[in-house]
Length: 269
Length: 340
Ligand SMILES: Nc1ncnc2c1ncn2[C@@H]1O[C@H](COP(=O)(O)OP(=O)(O)OP(=O)(O)O)[C@@H](O)[C@H]1O
Ligand SMILES: [Mg+2]
Image 1: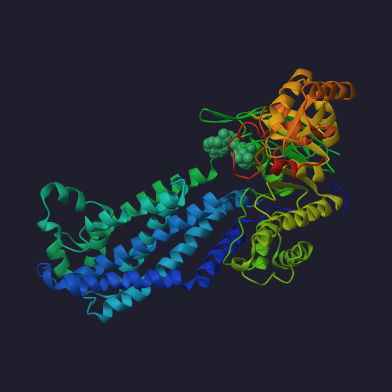
Image 2: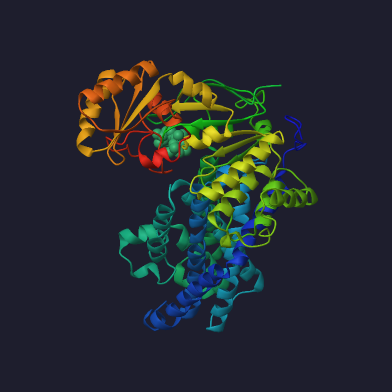
């Protein structure tokens, strides 16, 4: 090799192979650190069991069995908690300089965030599936059909996608890993101030104005009406069509806003 | 052959902080060039600008003749960046880390495998290649990080403080690697806070401060540009130190520097031999017991000091100014790092 004669790549890396490489990288890292996934599953399942057996006896959910009421809520909230790790991972890559290296490579810049989102969404599904199994084991039942149940599952995955994007944006905007972690705890109040664990009827009016319309409630109620049918509709006051439409609007809005924020931040220089 | 780097009037501010303030650079290709500057001088910003990560507010920047603003994608095909922090993934093996970067450089699977293998060999990581990076030493990580910037076979290698945090042995090994790469025809631009490093590795040295180039040239040129010889006097007794300072103040072109630990006073002078004679005369008038005297060319530390009015950090992240009385070039830890 002489000066200037170094072989040069004939072309830049293309989008799909790059996304594949980066998704594969993230998944391989998760496979090598199984404690991450195990911890998230344990957390998700423990939460479910606590509400089933510790609080469950003391909470009345109108005409519904509490186990049927809370399962939809805990699966939804479980997804939010399962995606917190995304904020940490993204903040580490951002602050630690990995994104600098990747952005200096001749490949489509969109591949980096796309790879991260796909891998983390896969992780979220990997938490969701065993949690659903445990929910069935402790008594949750679907009282509609399998089409509606699959619809509910799809909605949960889409909700996971929205939250992965939210936490990608948090990771990029937080400025440090600690800040990203701190901000992520917003999922605590947001999940409690919803219909996930208790019916909203007992809450004061000013709080209900928030809880009844915020995305967690809307998604939880959509899953509830899709899986429980009539008793849920009677308790919540609306049919599945009402909640599913609103849930989809929320999910799309969240993805547009937070993916937009994340991509803008990632591309800014 | 186009220039490796050509910058004219580069500017960039972050809010109120001016990181680059009209930077002008011309670097021929076929060499190792070093950017030397204190903390916050703008070294990283300049390297990130070349890497298309930071947009200039104004000015022109070309890499191998390609305009960075107009053709960022083509520029990315030419460069390999190793940032200030090693960014290799601990949960992957060295080989996997390199293969990933090679793939993202546009290489197909088979080529990527071959490039990774070749790079591991070149960095003497062949045996560790299939171990998780988690178990690597700091020096191995740094080498692998260099490998990641190499695996795409870039024409211009950009290294931001490549030897920061390495022990002396690993540092020398990394220097050898960088020299070998340059000998193979890769252009290298590196930043450093170590004068010795610039002196040992680089053909051209750029000294930057407050976002501007304040001097450039070979190490030799820079030393002779600073021009002045240094008169150094070691005294035998601590009590004589102040008298020696008084004597050297009289003959020096600048304020003398005092190292109380090794009982030494040094000062830059305009015409060496004459001033040396005067200095000896002055100190013997004052009855100072002289242990040793020397007349020497300035070290790069002293060049740096006279150009910037500050000293480069001796520890990578230690940006605090040195305590008075331990000026550059004579403080023991600096002295051990500078080339006389
Ligand atoms: N992204 C940024 N946001 C705000 N300020 C920045 C940013 N990047 C650099 N700066 C500021 O610009 C100036 C130059 O920084 P730069 O990192 O280029 O210095 P440096 O010479 O690499 O320093 P060091 O030796 O500490 O690495 C500093 O004052 C720094 O605080
Ligand atoms: Mg820097």
